[in-house]
Length: 155
Image (cartoon, rainbow, N blue to C red):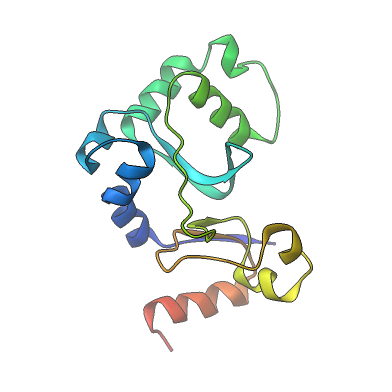
């Protein structure tokens, strides 16, 4: 069994940052409230949900109003809802900014231990996460406990 670790305070900070505004192509972070936005781990220009993804209110409104359009594949049954939602949102005008910095991820689809202990590093690179990490996926219970202690100083 694997889990998703989320650092909510980093998400909150990133959503209010000028860095996200620049990535979305707007002048200030307050302008982000008015444009449909989906952020998360990107792979081949679409969001993949393994590291989680987030929509703002404008993005959620766009999704609700677009869900039955044919370009949103309303009758498709798939376990890849993240890709379908990403394609739907993008085709209806939502912005999907790049959330990585210097090749390091905010929404990591892998646990950091994978980067150093398995051969997957040759496919995704050896850079794991930025300091303002938002989520990690494929975490084992002991890894979650360890990272929680590292993040919050709990012994």
